[in-house]
Structure formats: C-alpha cells, structure tokens
Amino acid sequence: MSDRFTDIVSLLTCKGLPFALYRLPGQQPVLVAQQTRSLEKYPIEALDKMKGFVVAPFTAQKQMEFIRPDIVFKEGRIAENLQKELQNLPRFQEVVPQKLSVQTRQEYLKSVDGIIKRLREGELKKLVFSRVKRVETGNPDRTRLFAGLEKKYPSAFVYLLYLPDRGCWVGATPEILFSISGETAETVALAGTLPAGRPGWTDKEREEQEMVTAYIEEALWREGVESFEKQGPETVPAGQLLHLKTTFSIPMGELKHPGRLVARLHPTPAVCGLPADKAFQLIGKIEKHQRSLYTGFLGPWNLDGASRLFVNLRCARLEVGFAHIFVGGGITAASDPQSEWEETENKSQTLLSVLKKL
Image (cartoon, rainbow, N blue to C red; front, top):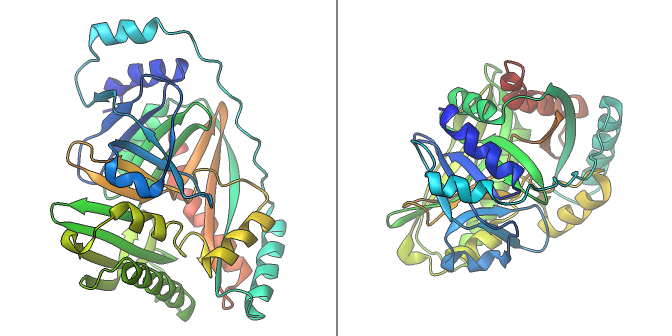
C-alpha cells in the first residue's frame, strides 16, 4: 500500500502543503491535500456547510481547521501535470515544533496523587491527565509507519497528517466522536481501559464509562433529540487494550444541526473530565505540555460519501529522529497512581509496537 503514496507524501511535505492520508475502518486509504499552505479556522458549528478533512485541537475556542480537497488521491500515479505544478512550488522551511515537556515516572505519580486528593475533596468528579513519551525513532519512512498501523489495527481510524504550523502527526484511534451514514447519525461513549486478558471491569472503569454516557445523553437532550437508540455498554478490543463502549444511534430527522451537537460533545469527559469547564481549566494548569491535536478530533466530512469524526487518541507528533507519543487516562477518586502509569504505558504500545519494527 505505502509505495503508491510515498512520492506524493514526500512532495507535499517538502512544499509545506497540508494533507491527510487516512484509512477508515474496513476501507481503502485516501489522501486529501490542499494546494495552498494556510488553513482557515471556522467555528465547529459551521460543520453543516463544510466539505473536506476536519482537524480540531483540544482548545476552549471550539474552533476547527479544514483541509480543502483540492487533491484527492486513492490509487495509481499522481497526474503528471499536477506533479509538475507541485514541484515548481518553492521549498518550504519547516517550522520547528514547540518543545514538549516529558514527565518522569516519579513526577507523573506525584501529579496523579495530587489530582486524586482534589477529587476526594469534591473539587471534580473526574479529570483526564496526560503525558508525553519521547522515543528515538531514527528517521522511518512515514508512509511505511502508516501502512504498519493500517495493517495492525484494521478496526481503527488510521491517519498520517501534515500541517505546516503543527508538523507531522500519526495515529490509530478507536473512538468515534460523530458520524453520519445515510439517515442515521452515531456517537459513542468509550471509556475505561484494561489490557487484553486482564480479568473483569472494576467499579472505577464502570464509573468512568457511566460519566461519559450521561454526558452524551444530556448533550442530545439539549439539542432537542428526543428519540435515539442506546446499545451497551459492551467490551470492545482496541489493539492490546479493552474498552467499555456505548453506542448512540440518532435518526437524522431528529438532528437539525449536526455541527452544533459536535461542538457540544467536544471535548467529552473521556478526554477532559467533569465538570467539563473546571476540568479543562485544571488541565491547563497542571499539564506541563500543550496537547495541541491530542484529544481533539479529526476526519473526513462530506468527502466521498463519508462524514466521520474521530477523537484523536493513540497519536504521536513525528520529528526527525524522535516521536512524541501522547497518552493519558481518566483519574477518579478511586484511582491508583501506579495503575494509571501502567495504563499510559500500555496505551503507548499502540504506536511503539509498530515503530519498533521499522
């Protein structure tokens, strides 16, 4: 698979043009690129009128960026006239991404212990705390990395994304934020994490999942959705991990403004916490790194019949010689700091297990 995308990915990157190479579960890879460097920002509510590849960071501004589908490439070879046009563009001086702070195990355990104390005092019900794991990678072919993730995680949304001001990102995420198929929309409550083979869900994981489910039900109610189907919670695999999942199916006739619901859902308690406003403020104070695209959302919108947005989990920012892997977990009053550390280590294996083979 990767060979037919290698040349165009390399060309677009050296010219500084935004692109997304992605694979929806069960489908073939697609590359979408824009022929100008600058991306415009839009409020998330404007989704209803848009077409392209959506990228929304983890911010309070409720904004998103769109990669216009100037180029849509699936197979074969890029047209010769287009290739010449791109090659004639000036070379782009790649922006050096902002340095990311990396916590040691002891620093992480101390931070989580402090969060648990706040939760037990009733300040919050839940907080999602993340960290960055920096690993040496050499300089692997990025399309080979994408192909490795695609092969290993057939049921995930897999992507390779390049934005001139944010650098190159890669990921394999299991979590749907919102999708439309025909006359039905879907959103998912996905929370709670266990390594595959670990016995039984604890009260802590079930409570996490119930919080996200209740949050989505309230968001639907606030958008005037009175009729929807709820299935779950059920245990679902995601690589070497298991999650609890509840699926909401919504008739499109019930949903007047999909963009407004997406804005209300993002960020969900599965990536932020509860109450959402307090959790977001506290994350900004105690996390030593900027999340940027991690725990934002992304995906194709009104592209080739697909409108599917995914929460940006199991992802990394790629640099020359290194990958910065973003991992996190939901902290509640019942959490154990050591168990939370182990959960983040397990989550990092989604990408590490593929990177090590390149």
